[in-house]
Amino acid sequence: MTTIDPARIPENLRPVIEAMCATGAQLSRVIARGPLAGKLGAGVGENSDGDQQKALDVMADEMFEAALRGTGVKYYASEEQEDVLTLDEGGTFALATDPLDGSSNIDVNVTIGTIFSIFPVADSATASFLRPARDQICAGYIAYGPQTLLAVTFGAGTVLFVLDPETGRFELAEEKMDLPVAAKEFSINASNRRHWGQAVLAYVEENERGKDGPKGKDMNFRWVGSLVAETHRILTRGGTFLYPSDSRKGYENGRLRMVYEVGPMAFLVEQAGGKATDGVTPIMDLTAEQLHERRPFVFGSAEEVDRIAELRG
Figure 1 (spheres, rainbow, N blue to C red):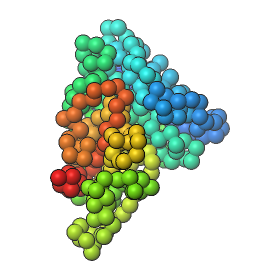
Figure 2: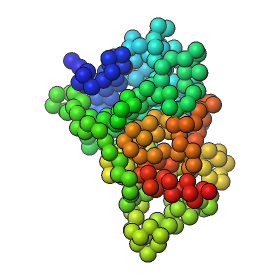
Figure 3: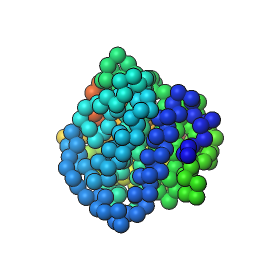
Figure 4: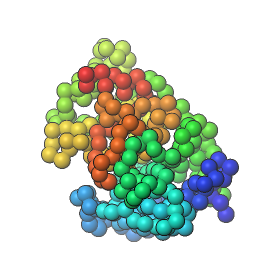
């Protein structure tokens, strides 16, 4: 049984997307069982970048890696693995993924997700991923929450599907997502306020002044701690997300990874009519220089992203 309408997927990518959807549906059932499925949020070690891995991180990585063999994916890059894996020597695609985004929320029943990005294969494994973000031919996320959702773009808009638990298929929910130009919400980890640079602080203070400040309207603050959850909310009703660089050691370039998180989310946001930058420069114009490198990330409603760039000067 197919898990998504093949007519809505480019023919050459159908086996890859089918594998991602089938595995996402399987993973959603594991997540829905919560503690009945075991200690999914238990720490099991660290990845190559020093972040703690949860049991579900490793499980999801193994599931996607196995499912993608034989689908045309030559190179597989995962946030949970140090090096690129070769899955199919004759494959024509390179797929990068954060198999389980939002690990800190596994045990508290908050939306978590899978992020993925697809490039055409280049001359080598690393060259297939260390290239301009605009070279992506597909990006998407699967959100595991009250509904299991797939948001995906192939470069002609961002499309939303919902997993129907009765049929086991991802059914079309929105033909073309449209991110509002203006915003009434913003998202940033306020606990890091004392470490922010002047432009970020000025933007937040501007929002906090509400209708009595330069915005002329009240702004609501939101923070989930799951990039997939934040992105889906913003794609649905507008808003702005900031994970900037700050003064702490190890946070000079923020904490989100260019290849696995920043690049694919920027592609989705742009295709929905929003903007995504590192604070100034569009993410889609940037090139990753290392497989696990981090980038500051600002995205969302165009007016707000432009304002942040203005404040950066």
